[in-house]
Image (cartoon, rainbow, N blue to C red):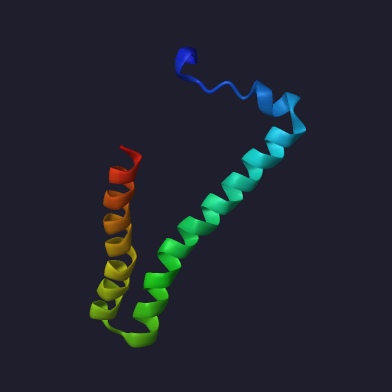
Length: 75
């Protein structure tokens, strides 16, 4: 089981890496809270699942379109 464990010893050794790792965790946590909070708030304010679905579409459609375009540019 130890061969699958992450080696966290560089975090103990390098302060800058600890700060970068911690800030990344905090940023990621904030993003995940936003992904849950926005649909919840829209449902709470409008009481409409259609509005929640439209908000989700407004988030995912540009992601799909620009991901495809960015993939073509990367190739």
